[in-house]
Amino acid sequence: MAQPNVEEVLDLTSPARELLHRRVVALRRELLVRDQEMRNEIPDAVHQTRVTCRRMRAALATFGSLLDRSVTGPVRAELRWAARGLGNARDAEVVHLRLGRLMDDPQVGMVGPVRIRMERLFRARTESADADVAETIASPRYTDLMARLERLADAPPWTPAARVEVGESVPPLVRGDLLRLERRVDRVRASPDSVEHDDAVHQVRKAAKRLRYACESVSPAYADPAVRAAEATTRVTKALGERQDTVVSRLVVRGLAASAAAAGESVATYDELEAREERHARECEAAFEAAWRDLSRPELWAWLG
Image (tube, rainbow, N blue to C red; front, side):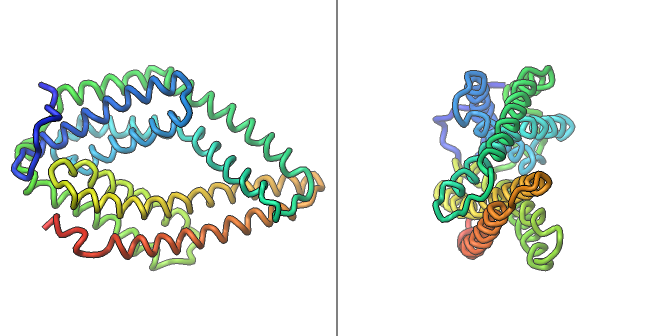
């Protein structure tokens, strides 16, 4: 199939497949760039590769009815596998930086060999994560995924629904992502003190990302209204992403505290670090509430009809 002409103007009368094809081709090209950056060990390349994998996976999910799911389903599963294989490197880096900044605060009372214990942990985690990245991108499975994405971009397996105009086919698909997000927010609010609260909030974040990526995908046809919706959704994902980082960092701190206690060391500093991250998590939830009020405005979604 011919590659989409990026100069061609897309509007609500364009076939939906032209809009989605442009998105898939662009993400495929970006993955090729990110792949080379990872192999050259460019800073942040692993994270950006994961983001691109998530964007591609989200496009195949939101607009799944436009493509043969027997083809795209396995591709989505492999994109998820690849993102997970690259994930430990990002998690280790983020938590290390977070806790490092906290320990650099002169108001944090450093009792015991906290920094030594922490640096030892993250040195081991970074080495393990780097090995995971190298193993993932060197695997035949990863090579096969890249080949599948090339075939998908070159010859998408369109369904008859892909011929329908953007203005008719896109709104219900994006509304579906918006409704999914609203349902997940409702579940979190229905059980704010449950033991599954952190995971439920994380599920809200994932749904918000999918909605954000959907808005980005359709912005060539919907222009400013879709861009504004994507920006509002980004504020939600940013607040919840920051909160999720505190969830991971608190788990790390608790593990370090347990090791320190077993060695007869003071856990006072670990307790303070965890308390600070708990306070920050509450601040992030407040930021989410403000972002959610903005995202929930009906006029923001008027372009969906």
